[in-house]
Image (cartoon, rainbow, N blue to C red):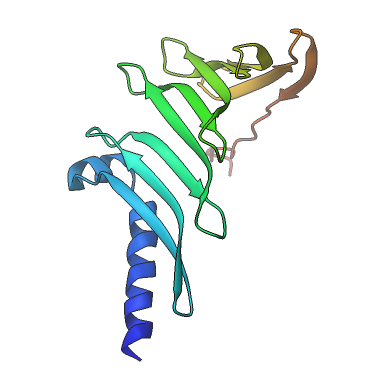
Length: 165
């Protein structure tokens, strides 16, 4: 019976830590969170997230059902704390692809370029925003900069009450 309580405690603790916001991670001085899958008397590492002193994610590591490396993503930030680069690695820790992100002066992501291991563009995404700072459009381009998809975002607002309501 005590094993069940210990397992529940560990699972609850891991879920709590995974749900922490950047501010809380920084405040608590958390440097990494490891999620372990416990089935019966067998435990396997599922994932690990590594943080810097600012509470920003430096690396996310994912493991397969055998507990060996499946993939990882490493992050780089600008001085404002925005992610400017995501490098994804495969199970052999070899670079799979890299995403480079750009932001406008308001800190809104305006461009995301995905490149292969040879730094050749695979995909480009351009984001547009309305006057309220809400995403209004997302355009996706292929490796040859040909537009392949456009998504438009339309927001519906709750009507404010007037004197006639």
